[in-house]
Image 1 (cartoon, helix red, strand yellow):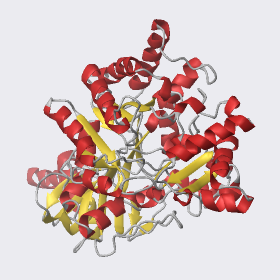
Image 2 (cartoon, one colour):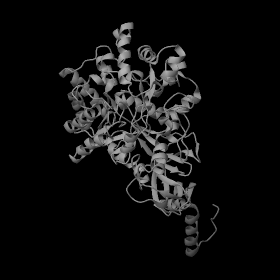
Image 3 (cartoon, helix red, strand yellow):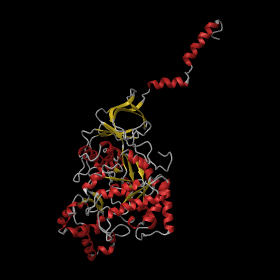
Length: 565
């Protein structure tokens, strides 16, 4: 034995034992963690010195924001270490914007309402743009609500799986699309008007299934087939189901124009009354989609429309709206025609495609187009590609026809989307200052160089730069709240729409000196400018005004699904 003849004193033994323990035994775990933590950065990302608009009514203040993982860890004057530091002095820092009315789901599975064919384009760069929702990110949008206007993906679980698997660029909430589910349940060619008790029961069960899968409400498109066939009673019963799971009732109303009906009532005013009554009788919060006053205006004022909403709110009803900052809308070619010409599937009824039938359509066009010159209808997308980008007058001249006959042939023979310069500009401005009117795009994820409406690329930047900072139509903080906290509150989104400790790090850093929408009707796919940094769930998707290639969007389930987000 090596130490056989060595004699140890008691003192030496104690000394050596202590030395052995100190050198070779592990330290207590708590002390170990403390030692490691002292060297770890406190934050993954530290945003320094920005002017913070936190989404509330609080006045802006200068502070730092510390982010750890996907959430905000601290707000204040912070000295902790960070893996990445963003210098935000001179910039505005806000919650990520929420687009409460959007249609990106139509790009990926399609819809009975959709004539978009982007998935037929296998160009990898185009596909990456669509999956990234870059046009939204460059506006500061970090969450979108799809399934609007009654059209879109009907299987909520399937759509959420797609969002997760492709790592979509923004977060996604989804509405149950009333119209497309009505098609699925009852077919396209023989759509019923009033539903039987059995039919309504099946419809309610289907809405319940999709709400349980995480939908945030139900949407309708009552100006289109098949929504045009739906009775108010049907919509009340379906909205009750959505409300039971914490959902909203979002509606593209039956009429958005100042059309004077045979009984002397005004189309848009009656449509607002219907939406409010559905909310009153179902209990569901009402969201009036893309609030507008379309031609013919007939002297109708925004104040009349707003008065109806305000009266409902005074009654205690949860009624809000959204709008986009453009005087042109976009819809199917036949949107201006009376319902009698349209089949249950949304196309023109065959009898009106005949020579005699087209004469009737031409007369209807002559009537509804009073005040809308043919130059004011532009083709955004069409199955006849040479029409894209041209207006009705240009197409007529190209084909040697008068413009009315050319438009009649267009609605009978072709599918596509038109841009209609038919909205009252003063009404659009009058809607903006009201805190119950949120900001939306009515757009969808889009690729550069493709046809479309400039709102896809510019709605949020335009609202802030042109109408708030420029024309002073509304206070800047109010404009920000219309696209952050207020829609989040409406949707029951916890931890989003507001900058506070524990919230998800959906954050936008804006340079107000360069903020601008660049998309025009002639060049509709120019990215907005002035967005310096965008974080989605704590991940930098835009850094120093450039895309990083990192996509961090996720599906967000409705408030009826507890603990899901």
